[in-house]
View 1: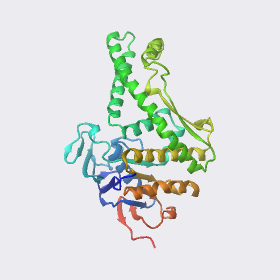
View 2: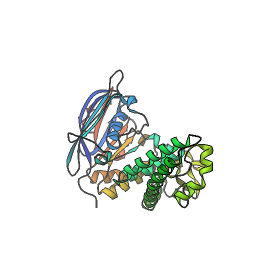
View 3: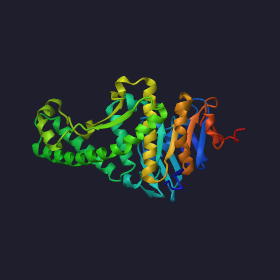
View 4: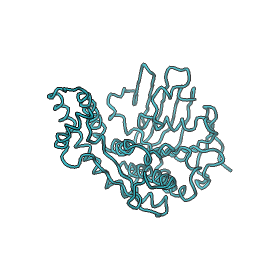
Length: 368
């Protein structure tokens, strides 16, 4: 049963973020349609909200790209309401980064992450199917970070041990004692990461299969399979691969090489799926993310849908509607970017329409 009070953004404040010199906007729960031509700033609002959720851009860029032209840094402020109200302030410049929650500096990311939960649907998501394995690992890691407080510190420990171990392997004669120490750290964190990922798959695979069935009208069967690069004992396999590690001068097995295999009717989606099928898989994976977070936390996340509805046919759009209805029933929010011509009329009239033009927003009167 979903909590009647979902997470929603009540106020957003931007200063020198992308094309916004300043923005102050209040948002109620429910649907928010951001309407405007291209390059007016619609997606920038979604990017700011996603940044509040994950501390990273879904466009895959660093902080410097998000600072308004010729300015020193950007500021994002937000008020978020769930069980309680929280105030967030974020500042980024090349010389300074600040993040505060309820007027207190954030010392550990685990104290902050989860304050805003958001899932984004965007054209870049196609890389989940077409792109490198690290993107599918990131998909698993993001789900686990958003549902297990211990997962992010574990991931950070593994990454630190991997960097140190790889630095040693670059030397012709690495310090064996130091190498052994970092190997132990790598194995300890790596075993736990793989356990979390193994336990995740039986929880999300049925959701993904069902979501794909709704999107593709059961044309094919989508399966997800976790393929760890470590098949047996991590420590033993590292020892067996020492000769190869000397050749490649890096750690060649471990969770950093894991794969999430996506198949349609048993065939690799990356190799054999059509573009339409890949798009359907992408939508199904993001729907899975939203549904999984809803089930774990008892309330739907904020949905950020970036200009993809107009590109979808009616049946794929229809598959979205239950997810959008769930967000509305849970008093969460949906932010959707569209042009005036292609916004999906089947969403009905119970929504707020915003005009976005040249880095400025204006709430429009209800549609006739």
